[in-house]
Length: 335
Ligand code: ISE
Image (cartoon, rainbow, N blue to C red; front, side, top):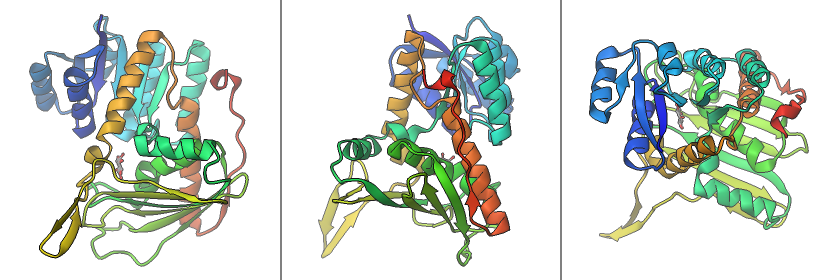
């Protein structure tokens, strides 16, 4: 029997999830959709044979919905995740889990109170085959102990409402989660450096930014975030270890040699670059929900990412190196 999924938020990523669930993945179908853009959402409902709901809360409570995907605007995430927990339903929430670390803690309290792990956060990079390979290389001690990570996260142009704070809370939050997962360590220091601002950075946006993190054992990480780089989507990562390095390669890439030139395609955006990661992520989530267990990034991972991102923002605003104090993970998330 197919799992009946309700999707709140039918913007770009919401629509992509609806398409992949109905057309590509197995074991689930979208039965209900909701968005503040009523007309667009009704059209999607019609196209995919789902019911349109005016209210996200009604969708969550509907008997026609067994599990919920929250892909709405970031500030609405916490409310819909909390409603899903209240209804006792599994919920997959796009990152960030909430607008602030404080709100994430409310979700953790509610989930622990419910007695069951119900939440997964959409940190899709953990499902990218390239990053998974890097994790294996590290765990198998192929490059010795990691010492440094150099990384780049560039977007061609940001959404019109994109702010300086969102460079960290919406973009770099991927790396914040990813490196914690790759290295199996939390962070202890954060600093943000603002280089010369690009003339292409719209309005008051400070772009690019460089985020520097240090883990508990002293591994240093640098992340360049450049959301208006103009030329395409470009994500890079090199882990430098004591006995070698491992570098992320672009997937599905060929090199063309023609007329004295050697050229390679550049991904236009993140949905194209990480298609496979999204597919694997949602397929594993569907399988887990059907097996009654959550194995993906948890609310605690969502909290640690938001907590670190909040401190990075403070580091930028105050132009200071900020200490990240250790957080005790509740037993609920380690059992
Ligand atoms: C977007 O929300 C994403 O999740 C993308 O992966 C990231 O590259 C982009 O900067 C974010 O705005």
